[in-house]
Length: 324
Image (cartoon, rainbow, N blue to C red; front, side, top):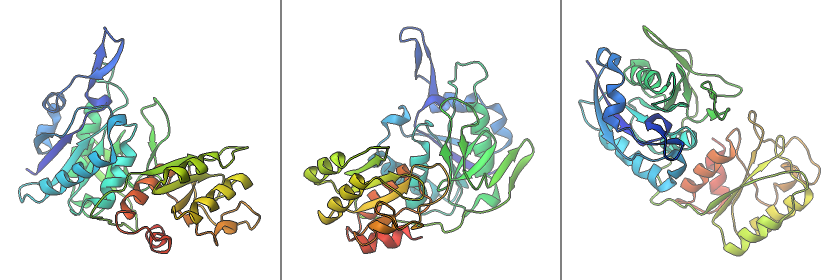
């Protein structure tokens, strides 16, 4: 029987209702989580490693880096066939993408969570853990990058996003769909996400900011970040990369100040592209040095820029990482 190491970080999956605060709070240990899933014994030999027990909103990029190092250390063991990480859903996609870029093992690495706490009616955590362990123990999950497994669906880390604040079917890969499904009797993989990428910088640059463009927005926030001497900016633009003229001016000022600016889209599917040529379009900011994020969401483009800035701050070199 294969050995799967489950690394716990906290999140709703490890929370119970507290009558004093009238809400969910961290309360369940990693061992408790797995004891609630007796069916695991028929799937794999499971070992628990507790990394943290915090809401996922408390997870920082630095913690993601520590988690990536732990995953690789665990995966180096000859007796370990795969790794599962339990995580809160609020920042799960960011941690998953960070790990996808930085973890070097080709063994299966799956991340899962829950939308209902352990004390809620019909909690989903137990089923998600079982599905993630099944996937991590599956031979077809090798060399597919970090996989997000919830609601019996398997998603690629670079494609998946949280789409609903409370619904169990919240994680989806807009435009692509899951790469596989988990059934009661096994795992079925149908495709593989291409262009898997690894970025291992000597340091992480976390002074990178995400700005969402809205109608009537001006350059105020760009001026603030220029004065702050921020290390990087990601802009979530309209459509395929369009912004109001004042925002275009702000972007160009930031680029002139030596701050790399990456352009993503606030739309949940599709990519930024130089389809238009009017002032404020992605094409019109090309000469200023704007970097296009492709299909990456703003939060994932920020994660990638943090890592790339640990290697270079030259826009042309940064662009090569986003062209992949």
